[in-house]
Length: 146
Image 1 (cartoon, rainbow, N blue to C red):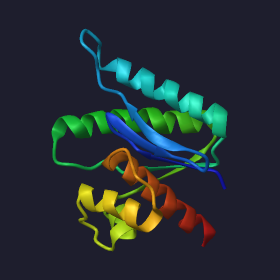
Image 2: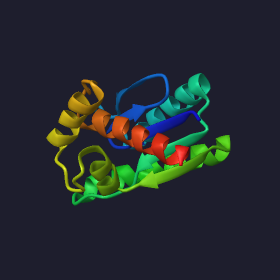
Image 3: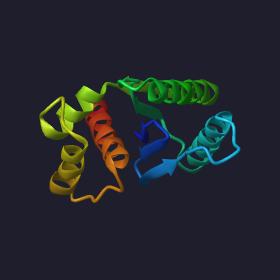
Image 4: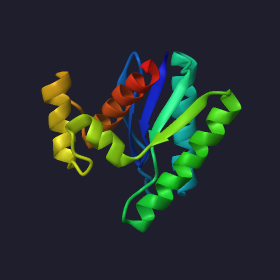
């Protein structure tokens, strides 16, 4: 099964069966916040055309900072709409589920997630968003095998 895992945020970590990385959707000077959504949709389209995922998994919206939650929720809306248009199933996991899978602790820090990538998978992630996406992909792959 070809799975696309996304840690959706302004800096979105992504991982699929063939590649992984981070997309930066920071707004530049004199741009509207809608530009972030357009760039995100364009990246999804590009990746969908290259890899044709069977399933998209993403980290469920959460957090304590209002602005981050709003951005994440808007991007999730774009993602769900895109998946519906492409007729691709999608599933959300909580941050706690991903962290517990990666480290055994549901409240693992960003540093612990990165360290687990290095120690357990021998992968040097770009940042914590990338590490989360890699672990999310690992979790989803294991779930689909059961």
